[in-house]
Image (tube, rainbow, N blue to C red; front, side, top):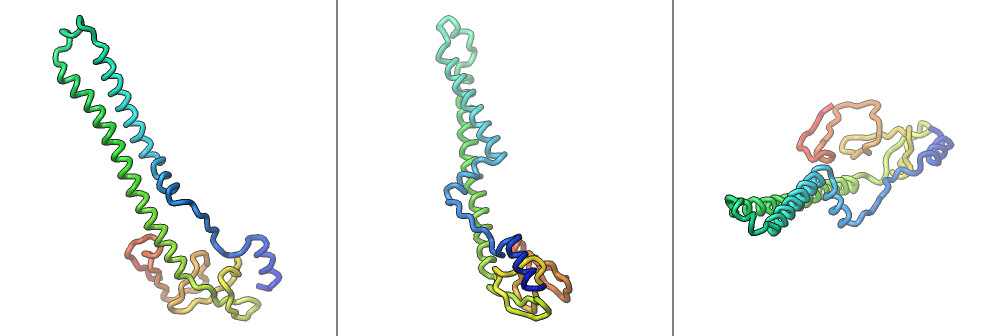
Length: 181
């Protein structure tokens, strides 16, 4: 690949560095409360609280003439509090589930940040038939990167020729598996 082609590809695709978006941790944490399952649990808690408030209101509006019709006042009272308990338990469950999900996502982000820090700052690249050491940010689409035993390779390259390649996937998916190709 010639230097002119490299410049054209850099203009077209930009430099080879990840975009670093910084979102405050509190927003990342609060976003866990808005998924599908937490939303369904919030909805269930609201329905339980609405049921509790309507049953409580109906108990306070009972006239004295209607009191003998109620067979078991204690049963109705317990049922009303059951709805309150269900609503509270659903909210506590949403809190715990969202907190654990946030902690897992944070751990995954930390692992990915650690992997990013492992990547070298330069690679051996073949351009115009000559092997050069190029900084990572100057890599472009179509570069031929030469790797040797023990090299950490960028994830966005295509392998042309491979002999006894070992890929430790735990860096990518946190599983303790190693694949040989």
